[in-house]
Image (cartoon, rainbow over all chains, first blue to last red; front, side):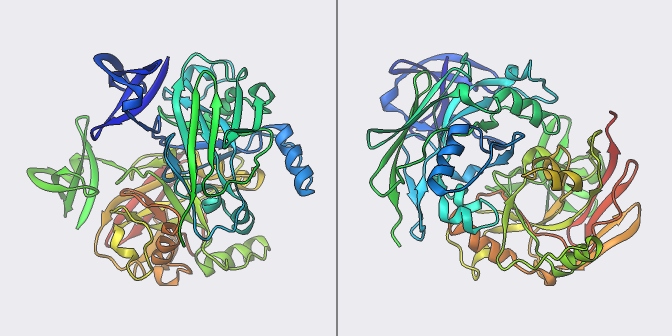
Length: 262
Length: 262
């Protein structure tokens, strides 16, 4: 199943996406829901982010080829992490597919994409094991973890390098029943393939993150875990670009880019 | 005015605290509200955290005496920050006054308190100046930024050192009309004064944080900014302790401490 969150005439609702049609739901996939008799053309609806997390988790470095690509380009010597790093991003930065990424006027740049698979939590979970961890996952969506690289170096924390308004596109839909280690995620800029990777190359799996997090912290329905990126994160994004993160069973997360006027 | 969030017989509502009485509100201080004719004895209600943030901001080091206290105790040479550091904490860790802080069974310790003044955002805000920043603040509450110091050193991020379930007590109430630079915050452990400081010693003010954050990120009603701690963060907390953060016009944030069974 493919769940989406939509807006029509000021009303926000969840829906089941069936081809180019959406069946409106009463309730939510994070609590309980039933299908209504209301159907809409997908094209007639405004897409919203597919969930509003209570906590927005993200993986640190989680793919080897991405680390090696960065080392080669920057002459650095970053090693693969020995343990899974758990970080956070913030809700103010979330935008839906179709919404505009705004590079702040004073950003020295570069601003780069990172296309990621995102595990969406469906049930309250604590003390999960790697064996049962995926029981609390509703499904998977896509995320674009945009980064302002100058600010990432300059600031002690990642607040504005990673969490400016609009810097976290997420969507378009949440697809259930997927194997998170058997997906291909691709990134296109202006229709040109920029990067592509298979999720089997993940260093630490969704299962591992969920077991690790829930040893200390309760996961709640709607929480998200962004699972890191592989491959290149260039070309740098500039005013007028369109960036797309795609994965066949989930869809395309597509966002235009503008630079704010000084 | 003093706003609180309460639970009674499975229903959660906002109320105005007037001495030992609570006037139940229709609506919320973060949108619109009016007083109802329903009054409750404060003692008959269960306290909830006073708001559920969309983003949970916190200051880095923000008081000089706290930095000096740490340097002296640990033989370190941490300098006062040259600019305001903006970090994050997570909602899973929030508990109300009266709820129990649970030290994980495998915590090597020490676990320490940090009593903080918290600015609670009341209105959507972007591009505020220091001059008008406080216009978006509803009021102030208290927070206890508990830290597991071994994990704080061991892990690359602060996910479990700072964000374990129950590690962020917040409350008891939100008081409006206060000068955030003219308050005394005190911390008691088992009824003994452990630390006390005046908020005029803050290195970076609430105004400064709000202006800085809203240059890049929209603040939303219910967001919180924890403003850092001064003075000592000892004695270390142990099973059976009670820790209280107090500030006269806000109240007492009181939490018992237990250690989880292995």
